Length: 287
Image (cartoon, rainbow, N blue to C red; front, side, top):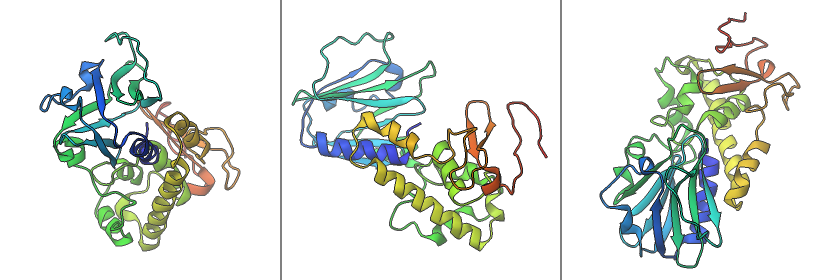
C-alpha cells in the first residue's frame, strides 16, 4: 500500500508536471471507484490544475473550477503517468484502470488497481474535507506543530498495541503497515507494546524514530517519477518485507507475524529481547 512517503512523491511529481495544465478528460472505467456524484466528475473537463497536496494517504489535485480531484490508492492501487496518453479505448470491467485523466499538453495518467479486491477510491469534491476519510484524519506526523508532547498526548490512556496506534489514520495520518514496522524497528520497540504503558524515554525514542524514518523516506521519494517510487520504497526497508533476511543492525533473522490479510516484520534481538512473537497464521504461541 502506498503510504505517506510514496504519496508525497506522487504529489510532488504532479505539482511539478501538471500544475497549470488543463484537464481534457476524466474517464471512469470502474464506476465503483467513484464515490461522489456532486459535483459530477465531468466538471473537471476544461478545468486547469492549480496545485497538488497530500492529506494523509490521499492525493488532492485542485483546479480553477473549484473542484478537487482526490484519490486514495488503497492497498493495490497506483498512478501510471504518460507523457503521451494512450489513445486506446478503455473497456470497463476488462481493465485494471479505474480512472484515466488526460491533459491538454498530451500527457495524462491512469489510476490502476491490481487484484480482485477493489478498494481504490476517487472523489470529485468542492472541499477536501467533504471526503469522509480526510475529515477524520489525525495530525500529520511531519507537521510543524506535531511535537513530542502532542504525540505523548495521543498515546496517553490507549490500552492498545502501538503497531495498531501508528496505523490508525484517525490518530496519525499517513502511516501504514510498512512504515509502522520500520518506525518500531528504529525505535527498538515491540509492535505488541501497549501505547499507554510507554514511559517518557520510550515515548521520546518512538517520536524521534517516527519523524526521522518518515522524513528520510520522503527525502528518498522526492524527485522520483511514479514508476520508480515502489522500488525506492522496497530498497529503503530494514525489516518490512524482509522475512528470513538478516537485520541490518544486529544480523538476527527478521521474523514475521501473519494475520488474515497482511503481516508484520520485526527483529527479535532489536525489538523483543529475543522473544519470538505469536505466529497467528499457524495459531501457535511461541514462548
